[in-house]
View 1 (spheres, one colour):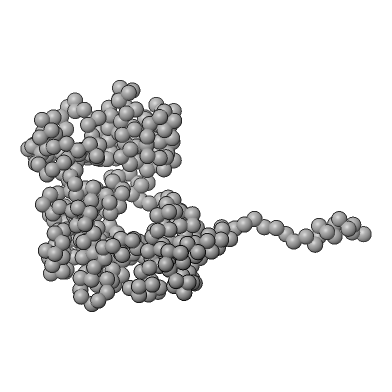
View 2 (tube, one colour):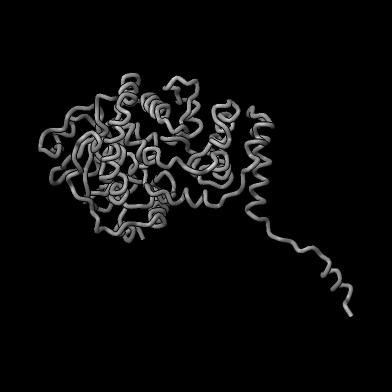
Length: 392
């Protein structure tokens, strides 16, 4: 005989833990109210979200971007490969007239546009396969930069509302970037142009002219100066004070020349305005004098590896040679978790690393330099296994 307690237990509905899909549905309902308050119509929102689903791969993709997890020399090996250089030169010939017209209108050289095109979509060969609204919705739901993704999602909905592109054609990368040169929606709204005169700012088309012109327009508005390079490989004299190094520690060419900084041929550093020194692999790797255009590229993508790859690939497409100093390829690279630990330990000591995200930015470099200086180490700001052990 079954007791009444057992019957009650038998009839009680089984409770399940809320799933990530449930959380996403709740978020979507809340965001709908926000979007409508921002001027998006209910019709546009509901149609745009009709096929949107939770995708756990978005967060994983964000955490595993190559420019943040691979040693810089491996990243450059792939980005500035012989194939990419040759393809860039061929594209320069294929689109010569278009690139010349764009350069004349915006004052941005074709080789830098080609390098960005290569880096972003392999010269248009792979522009992504993700519905942009779904990509941004997932990033806004549980991504690393939720507020940023939310703003981009509103901009994406505005693009759909304008009729610039249909839902089925609004395809791009997992991050929500779109077209040949991977514009985010806010960038598209602010800087996209109709270069071919067909009445549409179409960065998604097989014809790359609108995308390339839009990129030139964007770079120019960011401050691109066609009269100077992004940077130059240099050498440092023995006993150089590495505490002077840092991408935002700009000085005059005269300042650096007095301290023995030289171009690879042995000549003095030319005057290209405010100049900083960069050692992306520490004192054991190449050294670069970087100029204002380097920071323009950094605004396109904040990764130093990316900016260096774009700059170097643009030079190689234009016919310049490879870097001369070797990379420290035998150094064991740190994992993102180990870099995060370095940041956390520096923060615990009262140093400002700009956060503990496992990605080395200017503030982390400066914090490492402060620690290195206070401990009698060479202050190149580069995170190593030795540094981690000392911090531990």
